[in-house]
Image (cartoon, rainbow, N blue to C red; front, side, top):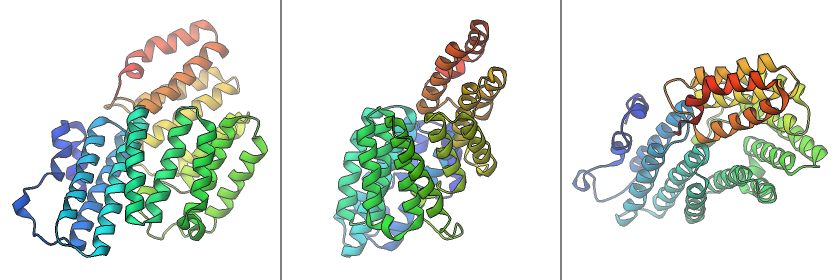
Amino acid sequence: MHRRRFVGAATGTVAAVAAPFIASPNSRPQRVGTSDVIRLRDSVENLVQLDAARGGHTALERAAIAGADEALSLQHRSATQRVRQRLYAVASDFVSTAAWSMIDAGQLDAAGKHLDRALTLAGMSQDPDMSMQVWNLRAMLARQCDDYAEAIAAAQAMQTTTIARRSPLHASLAHARTAISLAHAGERRTAALRSLDRAEDTLGKVDLADPRPTWIAFYGPAELYSLTAIVRDVVGDPAEAEAASHRALGALPHSYRRNRGYTTARLALAQLHQGDVEQACATGAAVFEIMAGDPLPGRMRRLLGDFHRDLITLAPPRVAHEWTDRYRTEWSTPA
């Protein structure tokens, strides 16, 4: 399956998105091998690319679950034990992708159910990388649900995984996720900033040219700058948050459109928290330009809701009303 064909399905129907995973049972050999695993992993990569461009939505979730179902159906055919474990790993990857899509779409109950299933599949695969992916998403989901104690626990579980102990890239993400969770928990400024420093120091040990699993391909200097912006704004350093947001936007690959929109919204918040209302409104408006053509994912709409509430508090009523009236339709349309 070619990536361009799948990404092009973003504007089509749910059936068009899910179609690449549907195959005639008579079209496959009875024995399953490495080529089947590679084909399914390529499909996961295509979903990740679609997510980066558009953000989480139900069509992507359904396509991911279809991919997981196919991976699990192949367990009924002849295969080596190694191939069976790899099929469980790719199934976990698909279900985790579905969970992330629902987190980004703001459908948190569905995301939690997917993560429960993904963790079981990761355990059956005996793949520590897949286990860390699930804990990473669990930390993100808990934070979205304002359960900061669970977010901290999940982030700390990331640090104890085998893959985090041997991979500086994974360890850096674990420290960054811990920093965000601690910052949102309140009264943990020092601990949050210490974790952020560890994330930066550890990322400095990574050769960014090395190949990496698809699920963690998003993480690098740009993402760490973006996470730094969140931590700094939450702990009350909006000027540092603004600077980090600018660095993130400068380093983001062009294809990461959703991340660019989300980081731009974070930049608008940081500017607003410094009292630069006019610039903050202009930056917030840029989010709609970046995401033009697609509805905003739920997580991004929630962030713009935070911006709107702070705008009402910090700006003259006329300014807040004008911004809301101008962008109400784009902001309120669900993905």
